[in-house]
Length: 250
Length: 291
Image (cartoon, rainbow over all chains, first blue to last red; front, side, top):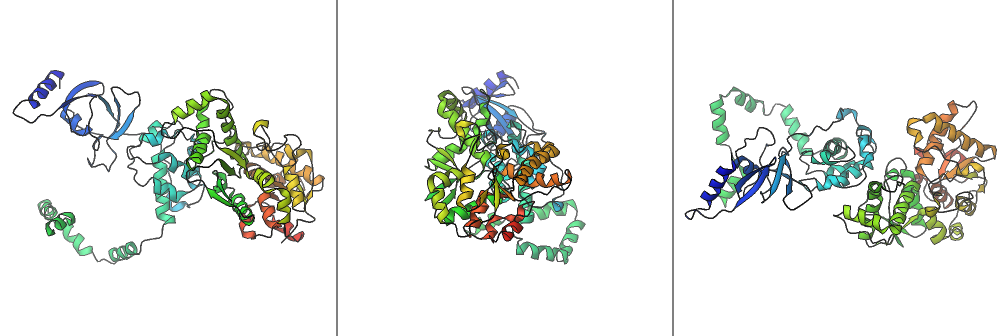
């Protein structure tokens, strides 16, 4: 899309017959586009004519696929955000980070024990943390990233898991770290260790697993497996949505 | 009295017994250690390079957290942490320019106002409690225990942050005397344990542990007392490794000073975590009828 067309669009949106929408300049990988205010970064990039092949997932702030690095016209510092969750601002220089090539330790969770040095032995580089806090500053989820790494370092697996609970694994922390720490992988290991070895098992889960293993849902599954795509679609569209039902009830 | 406590990673992992025995002692002395709400790794070894400020972020951040809690003093058990925190504290006291650079980098924290004093727990015992007073709390004097006090490097060097004289330290000897033990003095009390060579060069460290421990034994010591978790690992664990390098050599037990104070005060032996030692420290305590 050329700048000329953008100007036309802006002119059109500012037409007297339509409600006034202010137009913003954004820069996608260095190229300027004029977009309406109020869009998310993701919608603005799409408005500018791009189609996402990567760097886009759930569009709801959960999957972490749309991590974005940006700078604003008058600032020297970089900002980090999820494109689907952040409103576009005038003068944003944007780039999408679709994938982070951070190395991940190989382990079988069954073979590990939740001990003080378990995380350190799989990710020894956490001992290189200089506490610069750059990871925390790069987190679009506002997680205390450096603190959970510090908790992992001192063997407090439960705390590392708790502090990192909202992590969506976008990987920005690992991209920014001067010590080559793979924070989000460390956090995942902490949560796995906590889930498997530290927290008490849920009684309800145990009950449900026993029901599944006892064949209580076999008939329903078999029915589903036997359905055509059309029948499945119909069933899906007629599904009960708890939130919706509640709203209707009111 | 409540004291703000900076733990450091080692006392939470490989040196838990230093922390548990230290806590038992301070509680018995009528004080209370309150762990800092937020703390990170001390930085491990202060960088001495003029322009390498990056490695002062970790210690300074801890000092800022102490100020956040409105405290003017932090107490720590670990020699390495104490040394690192003190060196950074000193650097920023002396260089306004360095402090500005670090404060500017940590733009999400409050600026450091240079109000925090870092104290090693040994200093607290000597200067605030007093060994004379400590002696009065001794219920089971370590009578007949011949112990070599071992200082290592980080509590004594550099001079600016040392807690005692680098060549002729006496703090551990004085402490041992107040506990009723016999002090065995050897020139190896300030010899380096081998420090981090323990990771890549196990034999080198085992040989150093042998030199230190065997000199103690020749002088008549049947145990070593120290403070630093790094030295403890090397003398105790690598000292045990040295048994396979030297015919007939047997490693003697290595105690933290906090463990021996706890034993002399008649506190619960469970707080000493002796089962984490490589060389079992219990038989000697039984032999000398301390327990």
